[in-house]
Image (cartoon, rainbow over all chains, first blue to last red; front, side, top):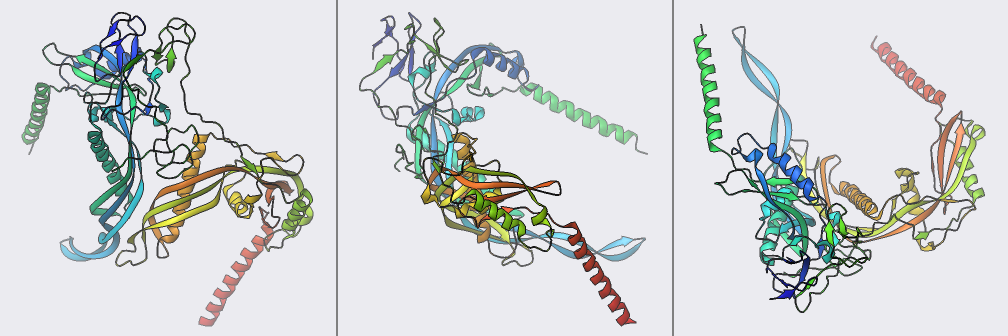
Length: 301
Length: 323
């Protein structure tokens, strides 16, 4: 597919996974509007970037400097490369959920217990108050809306990485308009709707499980299980702002990816750990414990 | 499984009434925005500055598209969040004189702990006719609850219970007033005749209108919280037994419709022995009056003394009987 740059007339290089195209001759960013295709709905919402590039760079430097001592050497001084602001496609999921739960609820009660003990060389009988638990079955249904579940629609950024920089303030959602994307990279969904629906259902199920656990009465809970039925599900495509960059800590190793929430500035990245440092630390700790034990044994009368 | 989309003015999932520029349903989160149709053929669109026609880029600093050449910042469509305004006023049916008469009746009301000279010594410090802001809601709620109660308990004092119940809120008045307390507005609310609502205020000269002081989003949050609190109150009544604890409630709201009303009332302040007390008289039904009255310290002391004397007498009688 060939499209012309509306600014200088040059041929644009279009990538199928991109919603924006940069003209190599005049540097203008065009927003590519494509006809409908399977698993590529029109975005319903978008959220604009609120954290500018220079702030992202400073935050990322600060974040790297604060990484653990067990990180691979060079991580804390890693060079940041290829900072890019990307509008990531993500689906916003909501549904009505009905959870049928069953559990055993522990209710505490006090009981007076008789016991024998030694006092002045004699066996004496005493009493004391002990807390016991009475287990009672409980079943019921919890119905509520599951909303604000956001899952990635991009193969480039796995859902775990998006979750790591959440939450996004959904009150700042805007109706999708091309002007929000102008000058930035925007991706088209690369995961299918069905894949995203599964991801969203998984997240919703986790949220509901937490809710059901918090919903239980009693002093203790055990054998909690629930069967959830979701109805009236909805998935809406939205474009969320993320900064992505590479931190190169070793020329021989692949760089580490850092993701920054373009709205709140929250940072996440998987820090490579140094097994040598960890092993040395474990050995040093074992040596210290051994030395302490040896000292104790030496001073034992 | 079919995916749901919302219509323009009522959410298709929960039937909550939506405002025209709502992007999502505030109750269930369903998108209410109408999607722009995808074009029939591919095109590359440039966003241009309206002033100088240069290509603009979205600026994270300005949080809007900004022209790098002339500095013009384009407006981005954002959802409106206006301050709430009353849509309807209920007329005063009680006049100033009748309200004053109600106040006199309240002060003259006999109660053992009230000072005997209250009616004679109380002086009116302020009389204010006002419309107080309130939301009137209609909604249904599927209320799920769980709790411990003493019903069916065995060795422990508590046994677990759970349930689900349907609740209908019809013309539920939720106060948005800052000047009136929650017990006051709750006492006033049931006596209003909502069918008499009018677009313009009709009442005594000089009557004030307390404005809503919250935005639409803030109002929705407060209404949602208030409905959940009412659902929890209802659920408390569903728990069997005479004592309960660990009540957990979840409410699934449907069909929420909210109207913004201005409701009439008289607020009096009277002074008794240098202290101010407040009385609120309903603006449509003079029978409804809520207020505070002083308590006679002498009478309270007399009751306590009588109680102590009675106790001492009973003790003396027991001692005498034993000897």
